[in-house]
Structure formats: C-alpha cells, structure tokens
Image 1 (cartoon, rainbow, N blue to C red):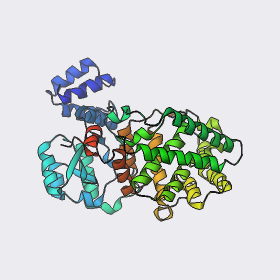
Image 2 (tube, rainbow, N blue to C red):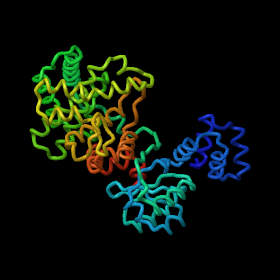
Image 3 (cartoon, rainbow, N blue to C red):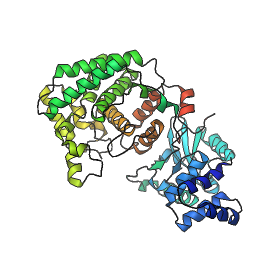
Image 4 (cartoon, rainbow, N blue to C red):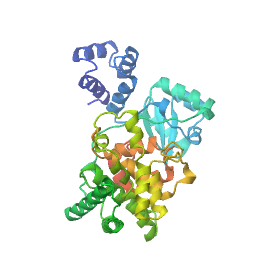
Amino acid sequence: MNKELDFIRLLIEEGIISDQTAKVLVEKFKYDYFSILLHLVDSKIATKKKLGRLWGDSLGVAYTELKKAMFQKEVVQKLSEEFARKNKVILIYQLGKVIIAATPDPKNDILLNKIEQLTKSQVSTVFSFPDEIDEAIDKYYLSYDSLEGLTKEFSINKDKTNVDQMPSVISEKTKEYLINSTKNIAQQAYEGKTPDLEVCKDVRNTIIEEVNQKLEIIHCINQLRINDEYTYSHSVNVAMLSSAIGKALGFSANLVKELVLGALLHDIGKMRIPKVILNKPDKLDKEEIALIKRHPILGYQIVTNMGVPEKISEIVYNHHERIDGNGYPRGLTRDELSINVQIVSIVDVYDALVSDRPYKAKMAHHEALNIILLEGQRAFDFDLLYKFVNLVYKENFDTLKKTFKSVLYGEIT
C-alpha cells in the first residue's frame, strides 16, 4: 500500500475526517496527499501537531515540532544557510555518528545522500512542516545566541519492538526475595522506623551478583527489570540498571556498591508521603506537587539516620537535580552532582517511563529512550545518555538497527 494512503486511513481511524470527506479531498487535490495535509492544517480540523504526527506515522518517521526542538549550534552549521534554505532542511543535533535532520520530505534519498556527503556523517530524517523549517532557519542561522530553555516534545512511531517482548532474566525466586525485602525496608520507613542497613546491603549484594551473572547473556538491559507493584519494583529496577551501568563503565567494586545502595534507597522518602497522593490517578494540585517534591529531603533524613556514607545519601538527596539547575529540591548544577547521582537520575526517569503508573500507561522501550535523549539533553549529561543507550543494546549495532527504528537511527542500512 502507498505509504501516503496510510495517512488517509489514519485520519479516518482518528475520526478527523469521514470516508466521504476523504474521497472528496483526494479528488480535489488529485491524489496530492501532502497538499491534503497542508489543507487540513489550514482548516484547523485538528491540531497541527496531531496532523504532523499522523503524517510522520504514515511515512514511518517521527514528526518534530521545531519550535520546541533543542538544536546544537555546531551541528546546525554543518550545512550552509544557502543549502538549508534551497533544500528546506535543517540539522537538529548529533548522537554519535548520526545527525538528525528535519525536512518536509524525509524519504528523499537524494537529499539524504547529499547531506551525508556534506556532513560526512550518517543522517536520520524527521518530518517537520515547511513553515516550521523556514522559521527555524531564520532563527538558528541568524540569531543562534537567542536560544533559551527550550524543551523537546515529539512523537515517534509507536510500533512495538522486539525489546518490549524480551522476558526478564531474573528468576522468580530472586524476584520474590528482592520485592519482599524491599517491601520490608519501605514498611519500616513508612512506620517512622529506621530501615535496617544490613538488610539493605544484603539486597544490594544480591542485585550486584545477579547483574554480574546475567549481564553477558542478555540482549537488552531491559531484561534486568522486573514487573511488580511499582513502588517496590521501581527501586529494585533502578538499582539493577544502575549496577549494569556502573559495571559497563568500569567502576570499582566499592563504587558499584555505593551506586547500587543509593539507587535502591533513592525513593525511600516517598514512604513519608501519604499513599493517597502517591497513588492518585488524577492530576496533582500545587500543594500535592510541593509535598511530592519533598521526598528527596525526607529520604536524605532517613538514610542519614541509617548511618550511610555521604556518597550514598547524596544520591537519595540529589536524584531529582539536573545539570542545568532546573531540578529539585536545591537547584544544583552539573559540578555539584556526582556521576553516581547522574546515573541514578537517568535510570530513574527511564524506568518510570516504561512502567505502568496510576496516572499513565507505560511507554514502549524505544519511545522512552527517545524522550530521554531528546528532552534530557539539558537535564542530563549527554555522554552518559549516549553510553546508556549503547548499554541498553549491549553495543550490538545489528540489534539496535532492527529494534530502534526511530528518530535516532532511522532505517540504517
């Protein structure tokens, strides 16, 4: 089936147009589906973002809203302004050897090959509207210094990948031990008691041993996760994945122990937050949000009373801090955040995205990675993000090509 015909099908499935309207539009625009897209944008029958996403989905690429994109100056300038305007294309950022380029015609192989020749890099394309590209060229070629706190909001193809089907390699016996032990630790904190540090260390050691045994046999780091009641499985998962990252980065045994114990206890402060707020399915009000944001402080108080070293307690205190200073509770910046804190921060967000929560369904594995990489470039250290993605796929490029067909790598051949 013609890919562009999929756009009409998606419009009908989404209830944006009827079958009859589709026939009228196809006749009116003489099978020029892109003109149909622009007509629907002008008619405001649906939001531009939604229409852009559907068009991208029909082509098998992402739609990127350039007004909210996070551009890398040195990447933008790899193409001359003259070339960018003439071909209506703009480069956004580079991840490793791959450059992301926005164009209204993301399936134009001639343009893609030309960009790859000019940049001497692999290029993956995303769809953006022509007017958005013109505005971006005006902004980023003429006045790049005006960039301020931009964030990234973007949609990708949500087809399930093989990764989401891969089973956990954690045995039921180990899973039961980890969950039950974590529940006991959390219950002690909930009751206002000081959790038993030796129990925490035993759980930590089990996690490290499990990761050391299983890391070489898995296809994807996602297989080290367990699915259970979120409050407890999240703590175990963050510790598991943090252990894998520490091992992959060549950390010493002692440093891994510090990292994993901090990761295991990172959310312990939530046990002092009313469960009715933690499990609320609806949007939180300002007071509830403020209370939730106190959990790093409460957690720090708990682990300090446990007598853990400062290198561990700072993970609990700072795991919601961001390198750009926009985190909480203290607004710390890069130089004030240890590498262990930064690792746990990334893994914390990743596991939250791929887990079912009271207020949202879980995301597909590759979708979560895209969001972290694109929205997290200011919040997290980019080198760590890149290493995390490589670790996720065990640096197996063939697997990555097959399962990560997204804005990051596209259909690489």
